[in-house]
Image (cartoon, rainbow, N blue to C red; front, top):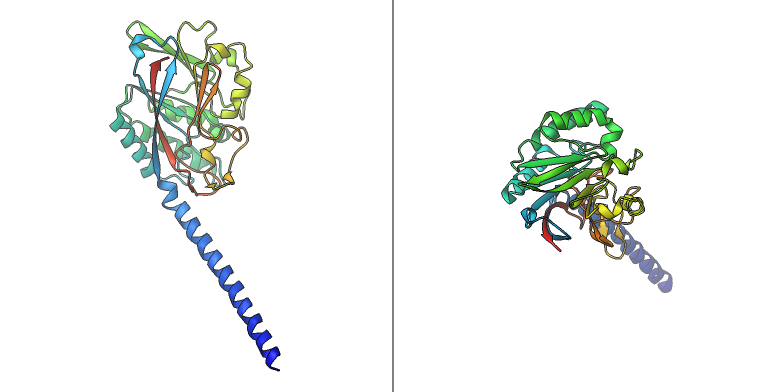
Length: 295
């Protein structure tokens, strides 16, 4: 009888221990989710990189570019958060701002929400005080409506490059800024997006970073000095050992930061907003300043 009572007490203690463990685990998970959805999602990391470029013209020595990507306004990104990016960008006084796609989200909400978000996003971006800004589209923009997003941006002073290129000029010097259509949803015509005989450096924007593996095989790849992408959000949730957990198609290999492909560099920005789940954990939003120097 005594032995039976002892066994019952041990069994009950084990049940209590398991119950406490499950309750503790659930509470910890809820705490992490709450942190990731509130504080984690609204952290901003300022990243500075120096980008050496061969044959950079004298006029562009020290030229500073701010990259902003993956805003995803309105699904989970509040207007005030984008306004904070604009405020911080203006404090930097860059020479050029480049916006590498996904201004809106193709989510479960009615598409009219995304149309309104495109207009609101474009209007907030008019607060940028830099001399010039240019954009490309991302996969969500195309899925919502390329025409609507381009119309909103260009009506508010942000030109959109779609398989095209333009000169960025300082006096008699220039470099080429080129932008692809979204390679995740469309066929990109790189022969239209990249200058045929580049007489100056080329900075190339394409939303999906894994597209770089197509770019490096193209005959005009030697012309490109720097490629800028977004799309991945850095994985949104990053755990020790496991690394980034949420990675989209065409954003699984080159997740964040700087990569080298011979003479060309690729920079992948973690973005402003989120998709799928409104969480960021160990993966803050990113505001990037790139300073060009002669290699």
